Length: 112
Length: 115
Image 1: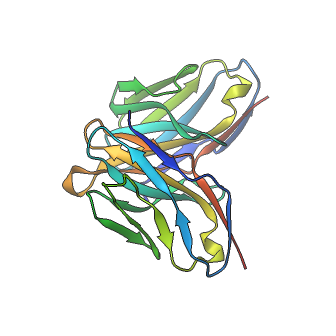
Image 2: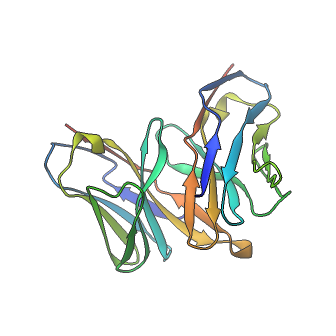
């Protein structure tokens, strides 16, 4: 079946460090891939997405590239800020059926 | 902002009582979802709806029922609340973007505690 696996947390980084959160997927069809961010006490917000192989999604300094050959969609940011502290979820959707599948989330804490 | 509100935002209830959570959207989206979020489990789908009076079960539907009598409202009912249903509940909608790709948008959540 369709599923997403993302790296376990929590992750703690110093401000201005480089961030990578790994995400791999299994899909029977040709999925769209997403990263969502959840700040404390809030719902999930769409951060970025990619809909086909080699597409790069980007937003707020975050990037992720849809790699079909490695079934991966790793989230990266070159220089994290304290305000990036949140939980990050990788997700996929299969166009037919309108179903979404989420990873378990990775908690990120950025310290000054 | 997809115009999604949830009520109540917080609720404490006793074991065995029925509880209804409401999700309201203002933008006429066809698809609506209920998830629960628990540590170590991420988001798990409870039920979803693909139109008025059209609903289907998700992976953790036992003990929950839903109703959608109007496009804008999707209700989640815990028929007899148990402590295992203590969780944060999120409503979501999805809409089609370019190339037929759906995107999902979430409400602010309801924190439910069953004592």
